[in-house]
Length: 212
Image 1 (cartoon, rainbow, N blue to C red):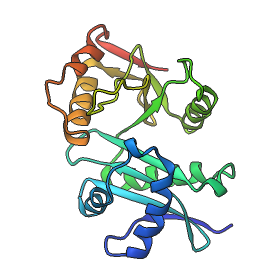
Image 2 (tube, rainbow, N blue to C red):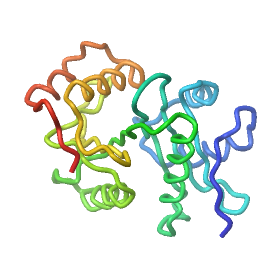
Image 3 (cartoon, rainbow, N blue to C red):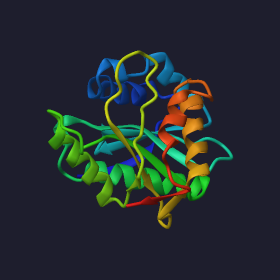
Image 4 (cartoon, rainbow, N blue to C red):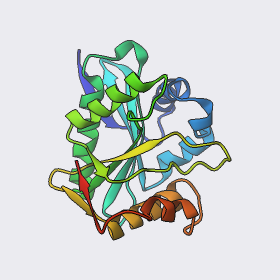
């Protein structure tokens, strides 16, 4: 297996089609961005789509949000072709992407949104495995903290957690977390800066939150 990872090229329709073939089947339609929105991402300075190649075939991707002059990144989407799972490809893809971001943008906190495995669900085992995957790479959970996904509909959001990957960070000041949440809600999800869910998440948060 000759595995390599690199950023999707802006004017390469073959790469985009290979990426989109995986993206369009990896997530529920309600969680997907439109094809046009993804094409716009490629040309935005604050997004990078990393592709994993197995020999000459695109077999996975991750989309990283990396705003200028900020102290965090967001792993917005990540998926691996279902025929290529379980062979360590996802770990290589994510580690290579993080390394590239750290080298080009500096070392920052990488935020990772996951469905909470602590809440009862028919997907509980899948959620546990997903959390274990990120924890093996060194990601930690913000505690105590319940993350509310910024859905734009009246649909009840699933119970979520916010993980943080950083080689040295072991705690997060409340004011830093507040800033991260505002940026996610406004710049990533298009919500208002004073969205009441932000205050709801932080209402009972201590001045310093641990990463565990």
